[in-house]
Structure formats: structure tokens, C-alpha cells
Length: 368
Image 1 (tube, rainbow, N blue to C red):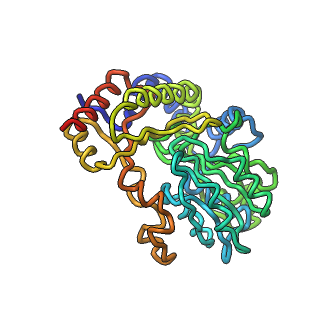
Image 2 (cartoon, rainbow, N blue to C red):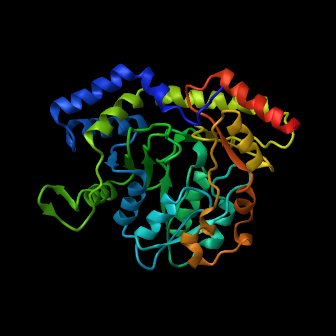
Image 3 (cartoon, rainbow, N blue to C red):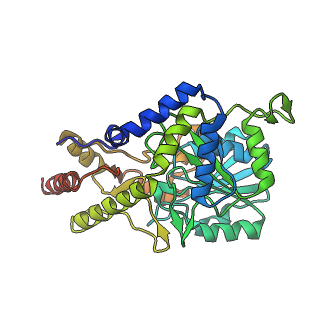
């Protein structure tokens, strides 16, 4: 049996008529840049999140960068984020001319370890960007409290956590902004790059929208220099179709994860994901830990099962951040887990039979 890590083709087949019709409508109306399809999606996404505004942009990295620039964060400033995530988060901080400051991960939930944040705050700290990693919200109320205590901005990186919740409230609505990626493999994915910001402050929202559009709200009226970061009409129309199904898809992901957890619970050497009691996890990724990770990954590949590693090198240990001169001891949990974490296939259309096959292969590997 061959099991892909993510199966975007089967999802497309289930929505083929709606997707094809949406694409054809955009082409027929040549609504390629801005226009009603982008506006419709922004309004629909804002309504689904229960917020007033959604600012679409070209990708999730831009969403973070635009947010930082709209807040005036730049040279001489520091921004705190988590040690283990995709480089977009820290890269955007550097692009804004600020300095990324990393914090180790929570040993159970893999999100930023809130108990370590205060030790990293200095007079230069201007913001904290927690990442709701793998679909699990960080302990955002505690982070928000720290931000209030130290007068820091809170920007939530929700790229892996569309519509996840913390204590019944959707992530992305706690700080001044929530940022999103709609990369094709995300829980809500476009058919190319796409991103968005949901602002929780009107003035910030205006600045962010202007910065994403050459410093302008009206053509030829540029109040400052910005960038060109736009969601195109085709992607917007596709996202509008898929948005109708995101709750159903997220629930299927949760059920698949619980099924995995149950089936893997009695296998020696496997650590399954722990779900924080206050969250609604949306399982963008299903990540286990095992000491013989590389051997298991190869065994699963030979058995037709695609897997991933998120992420093989924590950010502080990448060549890009050698200048920060971190050691392994600075981030002991992230360093230890980097050789143990393995992401198993998870997507809404995954079948119980496929999950059982993955589990059976892991059992056979353990018995070899």
C-alpha cells in the first residue's frame, strides 16, 4: 500500500466541480489582481473568525513581515520566538531589521515554553511571536499576560493552526495580529502561495494593508514605501470554496490523530502527541517521537509510507543563525527532540485502513 504524506489530488477530486467553476469564473471576468474574489474571501475569512477585517497577502512569511513593519519594529529591536519551527517566522524578524531571540520548546506540547520567555526579555524586546505549532495552540493567555506586563506586542503565527482554539477562543485573536499561510499543504490551502493577517487594532490594520500595497490605499497615493504583497483572484476564489469545508476537515484530522494515538499507545518506544487540556488541536501535523527515527523513516518509506521531519534542525542551530553563537545547551529540549521527531501521514481523506497499515508497519519495525 502506498500512502502519501498529504494527498492534495484526492481532495481536489472531491471538490472538482466547485474548484473548476471558481477558477473559470475568475478567468471569465479576468479578476486576476484584487477585485471581488479577493474582497469576498477577505470578508468570508474575517466573518468565520469573528473579526472585523482580514488583510490578504502573498504568503505567510509576508504576513509576519508586514505585521512587524506596520508596528514600526526594526533596527535595534528584538523579537522573541520559538526555537523549533519553520524559518519563515525568524526570517521575517530579520527582514524587518530586528533580531530574533529564540526560546526552547515545551517538552510535552512542542510550542514555545512560556516559563522560559521572561529570561529572554531585554530593554530591546518589542514583540513575541509564538507559533501554534503542528496545529496545537501555544499557551497564549500566559504569553498575552507577559506581553501586557512588559508592554510588548503579541503577533500570533497561525500558519499551522487555522481555526484552532485556546479555551474556546480562536487563535489569531489574542494579540494585535494573527498571521496565516495558505500554502497548499496547510489545513486551509490554496493552489499556490497565499497568506493573510487578521488585525485586532484598526490603526494597525490600515497600516498593514497599506504596507502590503506599496504604502497606499488608493492608487498613486503613496504615504510611505511599502511592498507588493497581494493575494491573486484565482487563489482567493479557490480558498473561498475550501473555506466552507475547513471545520469538517479539521474534525477529521482530530479523529485521525485520536485513532493514531489509540493504536500506537501500547507500542514500546513510541511517544504520541499530547494534547493540551485547554486547546482544540487541529493537527496540521501528527508528530511522534522514537529513538530510532531515521531507521523507522526508512522502513516506512520501503513500505510505501511517506513521512516528514518537522524540523530536522532547530532554528538556532542553522547556519543562518551561527552569528548568534548558540550552543546545544541553550535549547536542550529542541536539541534532543530533533533526532526523535517524525511526522506521519495525516490529511482529512486518510482512511482508517491506511492508518492501520501505518501502525502495523511501525509494530513490525519494532519487532525486527
